[in-house]
Image (cartoon, rainbow, N blue to C red):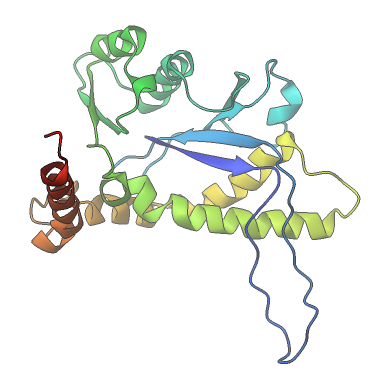
Length: 239
């Protein structure tokens, strides 16, 4: 399980092919701040996924926000638009419903090491449904989280492209919160595929399990940082 944010205003420029020497090319990015909607998604090592869970940055939820969402998707409003302990507890209900987790059918849930995932209510739900929650070590998700490795990267790129296409086709319409599930649903169909999901689990060494997936080279940066920190302490006159 992991989260990904999708903005109403894109700040990433689309690559454009133009004739050599042409000075005016029809693409731009907006300086507006816009709003960001978070999406929580869970996938399994066999290449399956459960419907997305959207978090809207509004105090009150409106049905219109989910007008264009895919089947089974859930949306809630919590004012901030990102996962908190209360929202994660609700997400656990969503996960349990679609994963089929229950007593007698042990389930392993891999997720980020975030305080929002550690509430007593969420842990109780996990225990009651035979779910073991295992978090990735801090600062390692870019290499160990399957969704980060092979799914969310292509999905964000495609979202930017489809967002730009939508704006060109709807010149006089403002891209709002309820349009995000529409674009995200299109990206899910093309990016959250069994092939991409399985590739993420394989690249991280989770499934099939590979304890040697990371070599000594992968740890050079961390060792260098530790040595620098040690040198700084030695140079400190107060130590």
